[in-house]
Image (tube, rainbow, N blue to C red; front, side):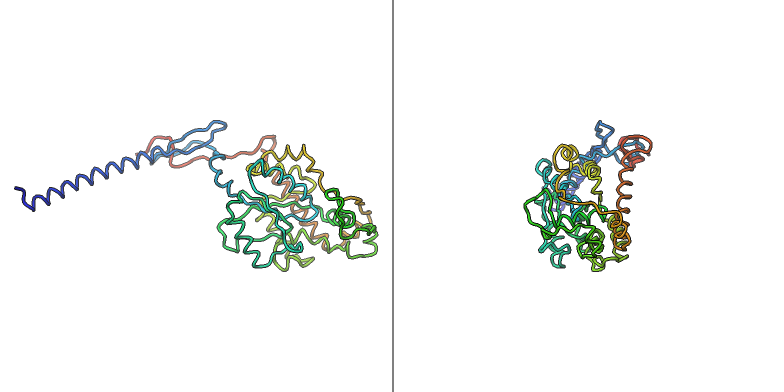
Length: 360
């Protein structure tokens, strides 16, 4: 008969063997899983399956498979187009509305009480929370006449992509001046604020009327500057510099009204999830001809010279030229210098090596 002492020893030995067998089985599974982990990489037009292995060193050259790597990111995209009035925004927004159903994303208009361009502090927080957490609306394109809002100061985990269009400041002011009097061909029967006033822009400047005062051009700078009080102080050097910083650091892309075709081309190349087919649609549809101000008369040379003497015009024009240079710089970097070939990039010297021999 087996004594209690020997029975306990037998059970202990059996348990030990069982533990060793389970440990070996589990270790084998983990190693196999590690060895057969596949990474999808694109090599030109042909996709490769590269198996990673422990202690290998990579010397191959590979490219990222965008469709695989960025799919989840694309589905979370939030774009904010804080459109400046009279910069061609209606044409661009209508193009986006045409594409939203075809490319499966949402477009939402930001309608602020009394056309105010700055959100109250409670609404700033609500808005940032909305665009961050409203997953059922993503991918999303928000647009509205609203100044740039820095969402990072609200502690949110992600930031939207800002885009915008900018226009020569005097052209924008003249267009807005006649728009208030005659409207446009987008809604021709809507009565405008200054309907019935036939004074030309030249006459307005000569008589020094408030509608053509150069301070009215102070709009693109504050729209890029943001929700700070100083942004809305006409002639503020701080506001101009802040607008420049935001334009290069916080905006994904800022285009030019007079080069909207090129702006749309860059968006289609950069953000195909939303803007696939945008160039062809824009060229073949009537979207490029929307909202032209009626009865607009170009100002006389002496009027232009007088406007350009103002500090506000000089500062607004400085921002415009800054944005123009940046836009053209981005365009230039699309292609390889000296050749009409699109720029590309690849990864090299990847370690550990997915398919090389193991080092001992």
